[in-house]
Image (tube, rainbow, N blue to C red; front, side):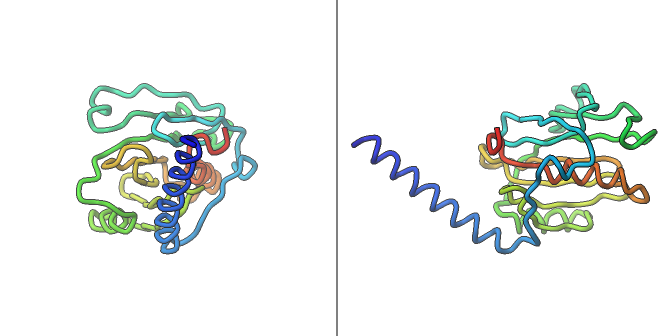
Length: 189
């Protein structure tokens, strides 16, 4: 009886939170359902204890995060070391960081905040079931996605790729695949 009651409570919670997510998802520009075969590279999944994962090029290596970067919220970095068989002599990488959400509580709030501080091409998306905001910072040569921490309220996680890929379709495609691969950890594991 206890198990049945617990299962019913869990189902009610899932339906309650799922309905809220669907209501907010209706406001997004689109949904992306990533599969490994759309990536222009042979990759590897990198899973984060924070409840999400990314599909990155297999030939890339994890980079050390400096103390200064860690204090600024960066906790993961991976790249090609200046060149690879995918993009040639283009230095390319991905980084993941966090920040407190402060007064931001919805994806709409997050999008407005990114626009207010000068990011361009701000778009709300559903990435494999994660509501996110994509953004571009051309002046500093990166683009990324931001989303609310799936397990710890009050935090926003950001995934950045550099460079933006302007003028180089392969760089653009690799960066897009990494960002579009953002998915809940365990969804496919």
